[in-house]
Image (cartoon, rainbow, N blue to C red; front, side, top):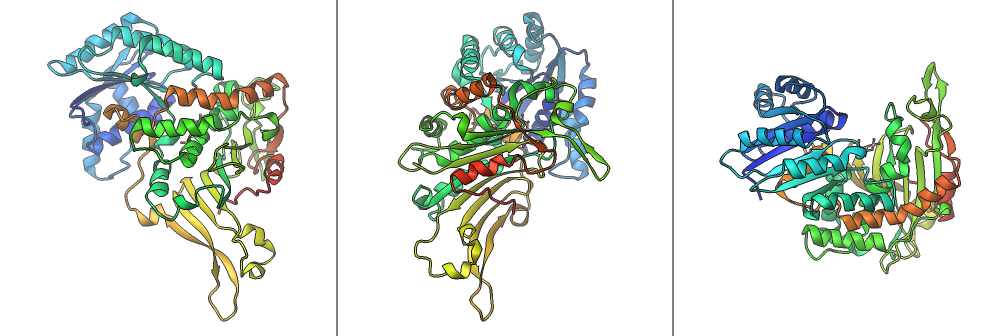
Length: 489
Ligand code: BG6
């Protein structure tokens, strides 16, 4: 559905996420002519600012990503002309009532569909939802609220948050973002699986040895330590981004592409997994060092991190799905900050060819020569399949080569940012890429006992060097299941 009118209010307009992601995504949507004809964007935050000042602030982070021509500058002006600001407290009914008055001026004579993007810290979430829903919700159209993690810290706090949200909103109005679901290659997962004959028949324990979900960043917390220390890498990346990708990867074929059908299948996968035990996990934390005159800080050097913090900045985990399709197949996850490279990928390692005629030709590294499908979510998006191939020539020598779908070479159009897709879907009422509350509960149920145990037992993370490949124990974890982590090639 393409709505005719929408007012988008970014609550927490001067925050980092708003500046770096939300406003630029809205501009990109405007540029691509994807926004409803009558749209207005409101920034709402505590600081005093005029509309003109907001526009200057936003314009600093808008880019002509799609089209570098002069036309882009003109479009930018038009877009900025639709951006306004209202200053108010996040827990102020009065502030939101004033916003309501301003919104009405723009909506006069039309349906007032309203989208609120809460880009604010979790401790003020509920206050803002209360005020927005009681003082600024739409009188004659829909009101939707986008919320972003953290959705609590464990099962109990997440359930409490859901309960609180539902005092003011019904589930259909809540759009819980996991921005990894908006990434192009994650969106493509279902197409790859369900629209190609050659993958789905192999998508099971019969042919797949293990699946790996790898997230690595080559920078540390850098000033975000205050937030991060409260959560750690398991809550920051694994429980949401990696688990969501896993669920999409492993789910059964949904009845249709409808949001409810897809989310039903995802929940089933999550509920078929058993909660993680301490033994299934390795945790690490980066330490500083100096190399070639450059000093790399330790996590605990971050001024906003308490001294002696045991918060993991790295974790590796082995998960299992207890159903007919996946019984016994290790699903390995690895996520870390301050590692050697920045990448996010899914690696599917297939079984050996039974009775392989060419086994002796594969050389001593025979165990590593099974087929491997790699879905590189970022950077440099690609899908490639490692196959054994005869090296051209008169001798029978094999090597491993890639059948490679490299996005930059294949598609000339730039890949949209995840937030563009998600905002567009929220405006259109498409809920497929948003997390339903039962999915969230199931995701927390998997990680909560482990998180509690880590904290209660004060498990010390293995220290690893900033810029390295992370704790050695991550390899031990993989070896336990006769698995090797895929190389980043
Ligand atoms: C966020 C995490 O959800 O995702 C950050 O809180 C992380 O710690 C970020 O850096 C990574 O997102 P992307 O899109 O840059 O890979």
